[in-house]
Image (cartoon, rainbow, N blue to C red; front, side, top):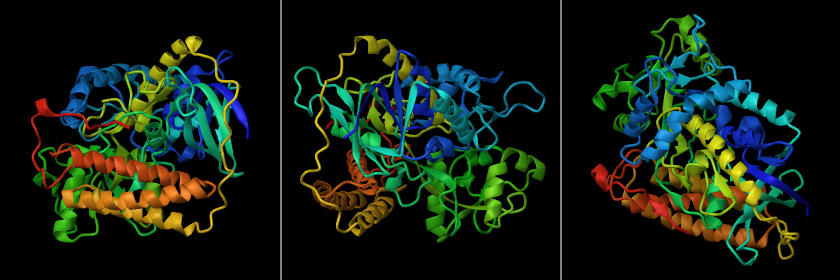
Length: 531
């Protein structure tokens, strides 16, 4: 067993994780950054739209706050929303200082801003239609060049190490993590005076998702097993427009396409969004996703169509070069043809409960980005507030950790090794793949865009049976990457189902036909689960 000791261990290499690492790393702070796969495999890297920030002359943080509160459907925490909106412009400037090249206005008058659903102003800073990729490429170059950051590539965290699990006296705190080296199959130990979870969301619990394969809820599951509360996991955002094509693999069509005038059409060419919301295509994502789901089921359609072809071709290709290129691979010319689209699981609005500096219930453990619950998103995330949250809370967590490290107790001299003395090599990996497939299918069917109590109870029964099988497999065989992810996905699925069953209303992203009414905002409460 290897034992590496660091000042700070950051698990996850998207925007949130890299922000923390780059802000902390220095001669007096040795940082380890764990990346399950390459930098390009994060949700941050695949984000298209950009970062919402009130930097326009007609905009203000107060207007950004107002739009976020409307989208959040009465469950946003105003202090978190104001905290994030007020720090957005500074985070954009920090990203520019790190080498991120955002799209500029053609007249040279600052950054080009686009508008997305739910926003009352143009406030989305972007790099064409591949903003996440531009951000991750710039920050990862900085990470690789920093001598004070150790990149732990190809490792997946298995569980957090806590003093309580070791039977130590005193306050419980996080001491590091066990991780599986995916190449060697060996479990290694990393100790740290502070640990940051930046592992992203859990949309791979669903059959159809826009997320990369890394979005398996690892951080949420590990934090829960370590004793941290989670909140609002029932609010799963389904992106309204994922490319529908038999050969395409979960390719998202950016919200900005609708923001720039894209029209949603039925197969007969009729627009339908005005039938569901006066804002039409610029309604918030939950409303648009439910409208598409309704029209598809009502008409028996396999998809609907998103049409931007009425705009000048040169303008389309300038603003959406990557979307145009990807669609062209599948024989779709977006300057002449509409794009076939369907909703897909996209974002987890709930997660590990933190304060405004990313601190969790467990001392020494922080969480940033999609794996966390900060109160920013409420019952529905406003478009392009996700990368913003990563940047703002990455900075806030780094600030708090830097202040706390001098007073942090020293790490224990010895930690127990990962125990494989009573396990053998797996005999039938097919069990893992079958359980994974079953989990994702019943979550899509029973815990999807529209829910009922009967569907949720069926899902709970099935996930309980799956967890029994997974626990038996986990306890008897050497772990693999797929088994670690399946174990985490099943736990997060269970927590999502429990959260959905406990909400007796429809609000934001959670719609239950047995409780179609929304309670007054004065009665709105977060769904908090306690280990």
